[in-house]
Every structure is written in C-alpha cells, then in structure tokens.
Image (cartoon, rainbow, N blue to C red; front, side, top):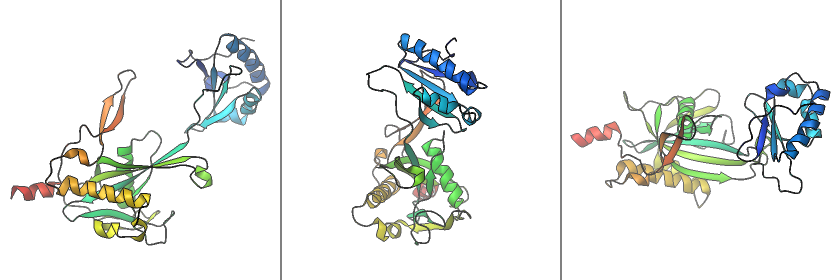
Length: 298
C-alpha cells in the first residue's frame, strides 16, 4: 500500500497528515496505511509525523489505531479536532514541541485621571465571589484574540464601560495551576492600563448580570488599601506598580511616555502574510484624557 499523502517536509524534518487524508478510512485500513507509511518515512529520514483527526474520525476509533503505532495525543483544536504526533528516529531525543500548556488572562486597569479612580468589580461567580473584594474586570484571552482587544472586551462585558487600551503594564506567571480545567498548566496574567472613552463623559458602570455582583469607580487609594493588596504579595506589587504608572502618565509633569508600560502596534510579519501585534516601549505616545487637556487650555 502506498504511503499516506502528507504535506511537504517542514524545516524541522517533519510531515503532516491532514484530516481529509484519513477521513472515511476504516480502522483496519488506517492500520495498514500507517504501517507502510511509517516504514517509508523512516527510510527517508523523516523525524516527526503530525496527524490531524476530525471529531468524526476520532469517533470511528482512528485515534486508538494511531496510538498503537506510537502516536501520542498532542492537543485538541478549537473546532474539536485532535492532533497527534510520533517521533521516528530511534535513540534520538524527541524534539517535538510539547502541546499548549498556558492560559493567558488579562485585567483592565481603567483609570479616570480627573477623579483618580479605577474601575473595579465584585464577582458574582468565581474565586472571589461573596467576599466583598474589589478586583479589576478581566478574564481569559480567547483563541486568536490579541491582548489589547481582550482587555477592551472584558471591561465592556463586565461593566458596560467602553475603554481603550493604553499599554501593557504588568505580567505575572503561575505554574502548576490548580483545578481540573488547568491541571499541569501555567497561568500568565497581564494587566493593561486603559483609559475610559470620554465621549459624552465617563460612563456609569453597569454590572454584567451573569458574573458581576457590583461595579463602580473606586478611588485608587481605597482600592490599594484592601487587605489582599497589602504586604509583598504578587498582587500587591502588580497593582501598586500599575497605579503608579497610571498616575505618572496622566498626572505627572514629566514628559516621559516610556514609564507607563508597553504600547501596542500591529505590524506586518514580512516573511508570512498578515500582521501581528507588537507590545513595546519604543512607540508609546504621551496622551492625556480629553478633560485634562481641556483644563490645560483654560
């Protein structure tokens, strides 16, 4: 039997089998095809084989056939497909990258310089629910979503306030996260400095009915005075740093825009089609809220 059709060999010596290639094969047919294909690929010096299976193919038992030939589950795609891989060189360390192992979350520090207040929420569901703890609106970044877009979306969803992204001010890492949904994974939590839209004045917040119990504009000092933000904890350090960056950016007379985090640009990749997001301190413009600019002209 001829080897299964694959993609062209990638720069790392691997080939890929698309889901359509094995779609419709019976388990016995895939067993025979893989046996012949793996022998051929080893003789050609192929190092790794990546196999994608649709949900329908998996339901037909094709994954168990692949695993019998040495394939291991690598990850599940957003549409429910399964990607498995096998490392072929005997006696050589497996150089295939591990499957995805990180969750990325973002909180929005939405700051109103006119009142020195930050937009905060109390959760109706979640780890701080029922504990009268004020926290930043935020959540997980969706698949294919940029950090700056996720920050805007989360603030709008949880509080109804429209705000724009200013800069990325803080990033923290937590490994071996707890809970069945994140077991063995790492958490990356970012804090974005944000500015409320001032068209028609700062919006009064409106809590999201399903997840948020309360939301309001709270004086920054009152927010930082909460017991969980005292001492030298990672949350205390992060929130204090972001609050200082916000005040430095809009209340300080210093004209140094590089002290308030990493700003966002969408730039072409050049070697691949499309753009990608860059967060850097090189192009952070100095901006002030419209109300503050208006007062400055008086």
